[in-house]
Image (cartoon, rainbow, N blue to C red; front, side, top):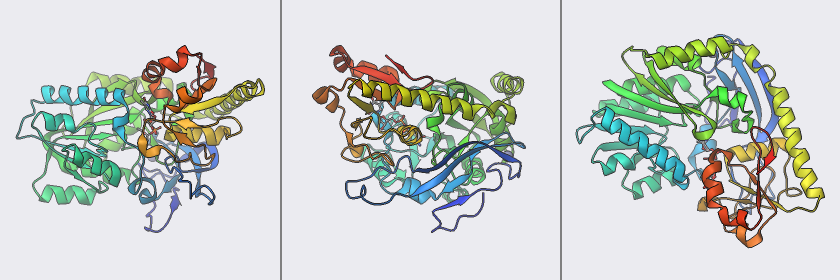
Length: 417
Ligand code: DWN
Ligand code: ZN
């Protein structure tokens, strides 16, 4: 990673984020886009917005898929970061099951220590607190960190770095469990972050890491999950190389349906690579996921989806339909700004997260309202930007649908349900 001087807004990487190799080839280009989670206030919308190149590349040396622009993490994650994990019941249920499974599998108790990197609003660690297990959350976002403290989860409002790991270790903190969900792909210093985990773990500790998986992204054309917060798009092949570089071993891997298809990685300081990892490495090699060829036609698939979605919305609009959207999600910002979905097509976006209400989506500046607006206004159609939570959102919106409202799912192919 090219050194980023603190006041630089972004840097363009010329080498691979993981192996440092220079063999990175771009296979998808979005031009310049706004920051997906940088929601606008009513005073912002008359101001120009910072936009940054969004380009996706593949490393021929270690197979890592990555974006080439690193936006300053302070701009992305520090102040007024709007994402609160607890607004998704499915995510809370998923996280609680993970914690209870680990308490059981690892025989955790009052003498244990669980540390979570990017602990957000305490959505996961609160389950350990409830079980009387010592925890520490680390998260740079001031709003979610304060929310975590309010639910009894001690949280250090900071970025996790190798240096912070050394500081904690010097204070006698070594973890039985290190959780890192939806953060490994977000960190500007991928190697420093992993080295820090190695320093924080007890010798018999385990890091349990969740990250979106690159295969479903490509297979289901989930291009909207590409935005500046997501620097890396992992395969097991690329992850195995990354961890080994820091004396860590990916010993077990699970597939998860959350966030459009993710991996749960069990990483330890002792090598004991199980069948799940060996099978996955073999499978990726046989499918060519470890080579550029697998990614070359993705850009064509993305263009087709963008065209089909734009045509569908245009047709409905020309028939006089009213259209709203659901989920002021970061992936929603990528979708509306790369397809060109503005107020001419969609009247407003709804979201349950109160911190997003009365703000505007980046770029297209669609107004964000509470979900009640769907029954108040009863638009003919709702474009589901948070498609990764389709089941619970359709249940939740049964009344709107019973009154004749229809949802439009954009991914993997635009369709009305
Ligand atoms: O990596 C990241 C993922 C894990 O979460 C972050 N960089 C940012 C964020 O991405 P996202 O904003 O695309 O994530 P979600 O979780 O798909 O966002 C869903 C949005 O929908 C949130 O704003 C919450 C909202 N929501 C809602 O209004 N009603 C979600 C559910 C489940 C609901 O019922
Ligand atoms: Zn590489």
